[in-house]
Amino acid sequence: MTHLHAGRNARRGQRIHGRPGAGRFAGRAERIAGRAVTRGRSAVLGVLAVALLGACGGGDPQAEPRKTVTATATTTVTAQPERMSSQKGTTLGKARKAAEAAGYTASAHNASKGDAEPSGSWKVCFEDIGYGTVDYGAVEEGALCPKKDGGPLTWPKTPDVTGTVYAKAVTALTKAGLDEDDISAGSAYRDVTVTADDAESDPDDYTVCFQSPKAGSDIKPGTKAELTLVEGDSCPSAKGTYKDRKNDPDYTPPAPARDSGTGSSSGGGSGSGSGGSGGSGDTGQWNGQCELMSPAGNCYRAGQFCANKHLGLQTHDAGGRIIYCKERADGQRWNYS
Image (cartoon, rainbow, N blue to C red):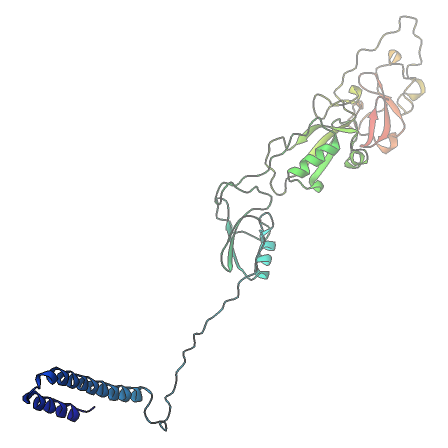
């Protein structure tokens, strides 16, 4: 119902109200008029709502549709390096190769006190692995790792192998860090020859009497060890002594016993002065002269080298004992027997 209808109803109500008996109809007229006004307002609101919906819907269906803009986010993905195992204990050169193969950028520093630059032969003690990077802390070849990065440099110590058989001694030294090629062997006696080949042919039958370097010494790169051996287990009191005292050039034999009889003797006979046999070998009948003399004019002594021309011959030494020129492992020497 429009506003015009509402007005008419209102005037009609007034007329009725003015008539006799209109009081009964007055309230009814007012109610009808109120309903008309309400319907009018609702109609106006409906028209406004339709207009607004048309505006939101784009109005003219023939109009060009609006463009829709879609935003797309771009994400950059960086390849993650492969998982790499620990390289502690390996050389720095091998550790660098492993890091590069796994996609890491490797760096290195000196893990001990000092300014020396690490080389490929150094040992890796510490590693700091980040995202795509790894930093190695290394020490010189053969050195021990410090307790913490940047600590003092320490070296393995030479074990005490004296009194053990050759086989066990070599095992202990190599385990401590020495190369087997840097271990040599020699004899504890001057008049007995022992070589490394002898010891290696029967390593459990030779005993270490003395060692160099001494126990507790640092084992640094280039360290060489020498083991002084005897066959069996009986070691001398000092290195470089003679197993047979008579072979010591400084050995002084006891005075020869004198013959209490008539003592007839040839006194050296045919061997005297000619470089011959040197007599019967009985020092009790020695005439006090040496059959063979050194170029300096002295009597030969046991242990001295003897010339090729004397090989197989014998003579007396200054003490009256007979010595023999024989071929030994350490060359041709004068010997007591």
